[in-house]
Length: 211
Image (cartoon, rainbow, N blue to C red):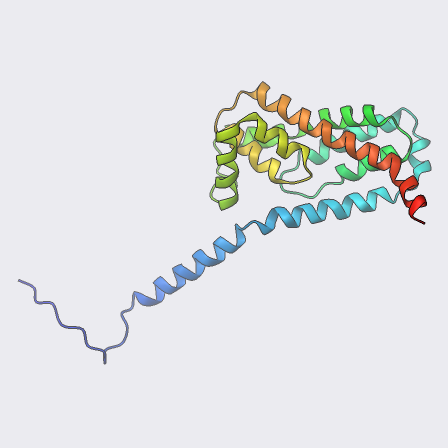
């Protein structure tokens, strides 16, 4: 029979206390790194890149003629295919509207391109990758996708936020029908880019009026 010795306050703390403290510290650091500030940082980078692109002289796009639509499509497609990386896609739509391109055409082309680009996140989730799935943000967004399905995809695609990447991963992981995901994504993106293209068209007049 083993006799348990009473605790003695004079004795040093057990050796297991240090690893426990280290583990706790690591968990806190991991929790901070997986917090909601990441999407905010990506959104800030996106807005900065878009603002820089909007400063490109309008003549540079006008001289491209019909190729301007091709440029908007390609730039939006490539930018939307990158996960959690700031992209200048917002600025492309603004610049196209500012340059006089048809805002409806710009919105539709950009929406289709962006929707196709968002397939990357869906594929990541469908393949079973655990990218971002252990974060609190993913758990929250996955709950939205589970509850409201394609409506969540539509809303997150319509607003300028990198959270749509997380929603795409969740949709793929939950095996949302690919066609449903793609249509909801394209509709939301089209709404967003059409609004941006019209804003780009009217912004110079608005600025001139304020002066």
